[in-house]
Image 1 (cartoon, rainbow, N blue to C red):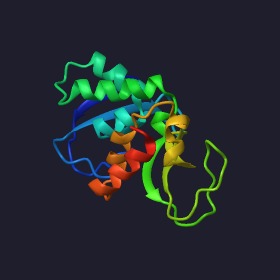
Image 2 (cartoon, rainbow, N blue to C red; image 1 turned 60 degrees about the vertical axis):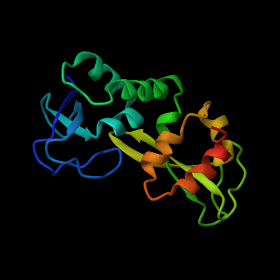
Image 3 (spheres, one colour; image 1 turned 90 degrees about the vertical axis):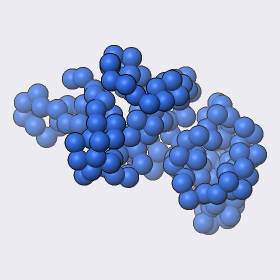
Image 4 (cartoon, rainbow, N blue to C red; image 1 turned 45 degrees about the vertical axis):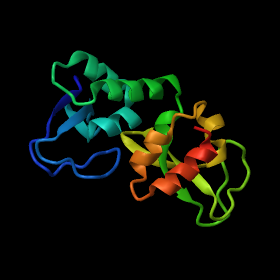
Length: 176
């Protein structure tokens, strides 16, 4: 099964990475997987925006970008982000950044409670073709957990409601 990069034929598909619709005619990445509900060797396709695929599914995107002849805008940047995700195995888990709504969550890095209104980064795990919530890390623990400080492009991408001042505050906490 070959993964694919192609223009979206309609605007109905949603990106598995961010949940937003993929506009008709926009390039999309299709990860082809065996269909667990089919009796034969049928496949299913999970669609992603190319940038979301670079952040969340780096290995299949790299494989596809290196094999395709389709012209992809920002190809070098997509490859750089995807290679970062391969080099640091926890980086594809980055999801949104937010202030803690309560003091009940525990940081996956330091195992300490995350205080109410403290900045935290939510995590997701990819299992069985789905992204499952996987807890949080303090923004200050992010560099230790992800083993790099280069996570802000992902935080910004998956937290579009955050303003520049909030992103700068998180960046200072992460240490980037």
